[in-house]
Image (cartoon, rainbow, N blue to C red; front, side, top):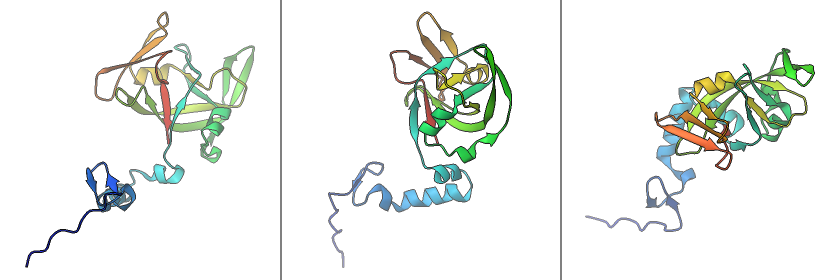
Length: 181
């Protein structure tokens, strides 16, 4: 005896499967894939902190700076847990007349550029707790890793994206860096 399939619930649509019948939270295949990655230890950090994709504004590109620096105020605005900052007191010269001691270091996953032409990498930042006009100072190490070419006259930066093509950002385009954690 052949039975007709049950009618699908039109109010539930899952874009990945392009079907009506279930939502993202009800998808068995998605849950199975997530549990496989969790078992392999590949996405524990997402469940530890939650997933965010927050653009950072006010970034200084400084080709003469060795470390990559982020302010404690920026970390707090990102709602990143300050307990995850590894304590490290390290003097950083060059902030006006004074030498500043870092609060510690933090390891953050970043996305350069927009979603289409992006470069994803993880960067170790020195965290400082001083007032600054910039939230982040990208130094030589991060710029070298994204193979950045800087056009100061055009206020533009070009970089190699994850797919090997050239991506670019300018002052008038989308934010240069997103923090993903």
